[in-house]
Image (cartoon, rainbow, N blue to C red):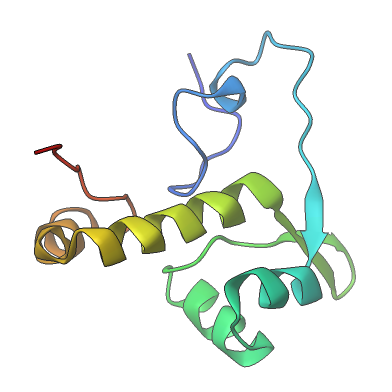
Length: 107
């Protein structure tokens, strides 16, 4: 089944993976909102997006862009997982360019 969102930050196993679902509600948020949620500057967001380490924006028209809210939320979750499991960070960064959250084992 093809994914609707071709992004490493799109939540997997979610309603985004099922094109037959008609209750998909995808919310776009502004760059200013992304700055607020990530506590990062516009310059940082643009730089990391160009480097492929941050979700890509959706171009609405001209220079107006927005971001898929679910991808930003997933990116934040990945950062929290990296904080909580620092020993897994090196494996994650090497194994898949750091685009997925590390696998966490419960003790």
